[in-house]
Image 1: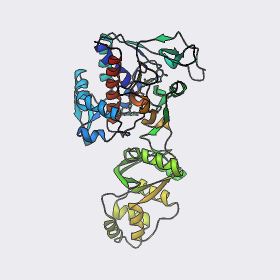
Image 2: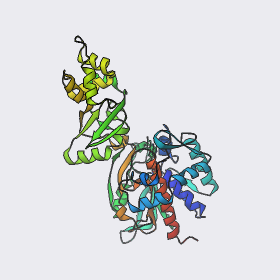
Image 3: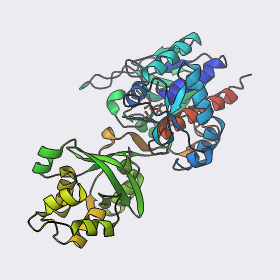
Length: 412
Ligand SMILES: Cc1cc2nc3c(=O)[nH]c(=O)nc-3n(C[C@H](O)[C@H](O)[C@H](O)COP(=O)(O)OP(=O)(O)OC[C@H]3O[C@@H](n4cnc5c(N)ncnc54)[C@H](O)[C@@H]3O)c2cc1C
């Protein structure tokens, strides 16, 4: 098993439970670093919504991915978590978390289980690709590894080739490379002739060039209640003004549409409703109560209770003075056009879109062109919003790939 993230470790568990001798290769000093990072603000392990609805969150809803989640879904995942001493609970909006909320106790118990099953974990071993046959093609039964280069160092020479009866690749995407998922696997996998769709940021913020004044006063300020509309689809939630732009759930949820639009036209307008609890008419009525001596800013604060960061955001969007009349102001508050020209870079994204194309896989997650090699987790070409779907998809495809591997091995 190559890659010691949730997908790799789950594959290892399933294989080892069936008696297969498993070695996990991981290039960081320890496994599960992104899993631990994901748990920092609460490990949202899956979602409690009905399965049919949950399945609509995956894009593309490839039949193999759907089958994998159907056969090892939220119920199985929660039972598995409980079996490691972490029964789950349902948090806000149906999100499911382990009892400890964080990932550390779960990972610790999991590693103890893997150890008891005889799984060997070799860290600081970087997968470089498959060995090359005398004919110059990739040898599907042999992988090349080398120590992970230190920053500024070139890639050290490969160690001895490692042969295996079956290989499961679970190398993750390319977001947060400092926890290990750096996407460097794309080059060797493509060289071996496998189609890999470009890795792109998913569940990420948008870049905005704020004015110096905005940054000075509102870097880190929350916009607690807004609705973001992109191409007619509106999503409510909270956002945060950051030095680089705007982050938050409703923006993350639009990433695929924003990326698509940016790809086509080079820009994308996010329509911000900065007072989603009031209708345009209600806002006009309230603004009409403005005292004659009040400035526009004071009126927005007094009549609508808009906080300074929201008023500043309106200024940024307009670029000049705010309109004076209640109708124009109400229109702006309900649909402020924030034009963006880029998303945050993939290094800052929560997850990755793109990856190994499903066309490359058979129904058991095996690479058609490299028999005996299976792929699982985020390195596959699917994306999903936040809400526990990313881990669910990673675990489900891992279980499916492990069963595919058992079948391939004709394991009793
Ligand atoms: C800040 C943050 C918060 C998140 N929160 C949540 C959440 O609450 N809920 C949720 O569902 N999802 C969350 N996610 C997403 C979730 O963590 C990932 O979808 C999940 O970890 C993917 O699992 P994976 O095993 O496929 O890949 P990864 O976890 O990325 O694991 C891949 C492993 O492969 C190793 N590796 C990479 N290249 C090589 C190589 N060449 N050789 C050897 N080893 C290599 C990496 O070091 C890594 O250990 C979050 C992500 C981030 C960044």
